[in-house]
Length: 348
Ligand SMILES: C[S@@+](CC[C@H](N)C(=O)[O-])C[C@H]1O[C@@H](n2cnc3c(N)ncnc32)[C@H](O)[C@@H]1O
Image 1: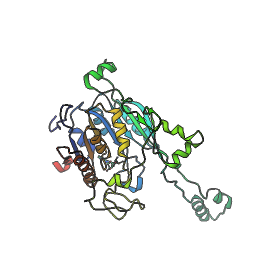
Image 2: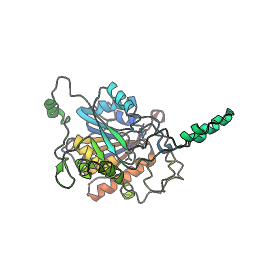
Image 3: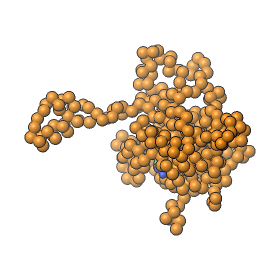
Image 4: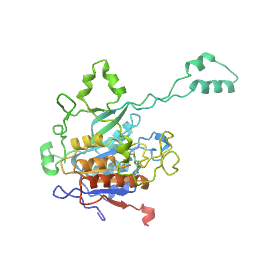
């Protein structure tokens, strides 16, 4: 394959790269079986906050290319929505992945969606020259959505090479097991093993445990949604944008202008916890929906090499700023590389 990237090995210093372009094009430049983990936060296809990019989940082609670049036995973690995660799972299975698990990230900040259906029904009845006060009253405060309280993180695995056992696969490529030992966490009294349930430790979530005793919650790893400080760390020199910014981005009316104006930033500690479980030490982590590069910052903190692919140039600048600040904090010898990919039409 021409123009493929050189991927660092365990002997080298970790390297960091952000690619601005479509993930299928970016993936095509990555050598076959060179990646130890893909950890990504796919669009949910729910038109979240009016973001144009939230129109489809990870594409069939991107999943096929993801399968190709992963080593045998390696994992792909893909955040999804509780409404559309089945599409990701079906597409992934078609490409050869095994659906290993679904981790639930439970949080308390989901917004209730109310809609005045009663009023809509009333106006439809009016058009028909009818009235039905009981029907209107009954549907007055109904909704078409439940309050979202968790995000599924789908755990996919590329099968071992044909005829190989788990142990043989680990000897060949290092991938295939989950480090549940070194990722145990101390939530007060003793070390706990990671599980497929993670929460944000919010009051709302803790209350749900109140009937069985709050101590039950200590069994689970938790990390809150990222703070404004965490999101913007390293981006101080970038322009602040928000509800008035008319680029390809957010229409979220509640967003105050800020340098990192990405609407769906994942907590770095959550991504760090996940990649430390699923990526062998010194491995290469890839995020094919890089956004503001939370996975990249987590990779720096865990000393993995990292490649992030992101379509939107503005998000790439935010990701670069965050990554470079974290790299300079640990006196890393190099900055994060940046490459803009041309589309096939642009390149012609
Ligand atoms: C859910 S967000 C990821 C947010 C990220 N986890 C963070 O913490 O900032 C999904 C991102 O995928 C990007 N995206 C959508 N389609 C893409 C494509 N085909 N190739 C590359 N990036 C894409 C969007 O611009 C958006 O930033």
